Image (cartoon, rainbow, N blue to C red; front, side):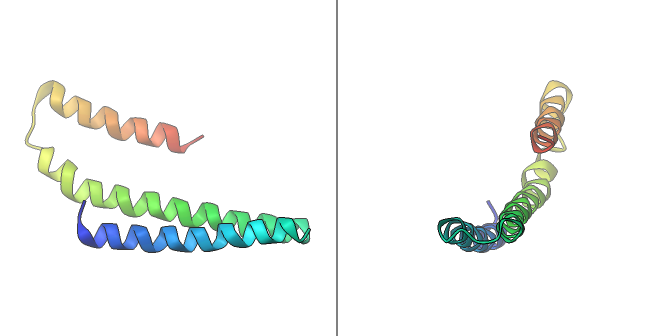
Length: 90
């Protein structure tokens, strides 16, 4: 993994952890439900950003590197990307 991608993804993970900690505190203190949901969505958004950063890095490194492959190897690469999007749509 590219160092810049790794650094950005870890920074976003730290942000997500902070938001998640806040969600836990809010639940423990019985905060107003819509406020908890807003904070929970911030966690989800931060994690989606991690996915985007890592996927962008993957496309620019691994995928571009493997574009010269042919036949079933290239099809495997396409299937891997399609599989990722299928799992992200859950």
